[in-house]
Image 1 (cartoon, helix red, strand yellow):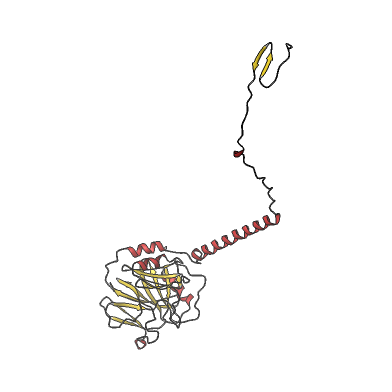
Image 2 (cartoon, rainbow, N blue to C red):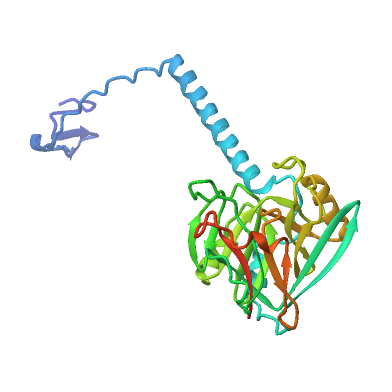
Length: 310
């Protein structure tokens, strides 16, 4: 064997006269563990027209959602008038302990901007909605009038709650009056939080057109022409029932109420329909002609706003 020769047989190397053993590393494989890999088919490119279509659909959906959000916001917040008291604040007023002042209605007359007004200040009374016209001999009733409007078939045109029972839910008219826990409030809002509260408390509630809101007039009125007008108005926390002595337009009536000092006022239907009020001594004073009493039409349907002694 030559000195420089190397025997390479997989087991020995001869180098410089030294024989060394070269290890053979054998990697065994279990054929049962070998998994055949399924070749992955190449992805087909997304068609350009489909990408464009999805983009357009996404944009349209975003526009529709934004428009719906704007309409919802406008419905509840863009009322055309500013608000003097929030629904939350009115609920807090309804939760207060009722005042202990004497029950009475104090009436005065005035002429504002050429509009003759009879103004009835409400003291120590609890309002409610009733479907039977009060008896003139009922000494617990100190004032009553109409409230919400209705159709000939007895369908009420806006939200109405009587003694905790909801008869109609319709927030189209922005003005409302709520009565619960011996307290009475009016306000302007599209939200029905106050209505829900009066239902919980077994109180009464109705909606009507806005005449004055936060000492401001609405941009337009839905009733036209000249007839005798009525309203429930607020100065501070005192409520008043107001009637005109002559036929007036809604605008003239509302403008006179604002000029007099009413912060908020909502419309009351009824015109020259009979009603009455009582003074501190309980003496009854007729409002309009008693010959029109009782109202024979719509008995059991008319929702009367009745102020009773607490």
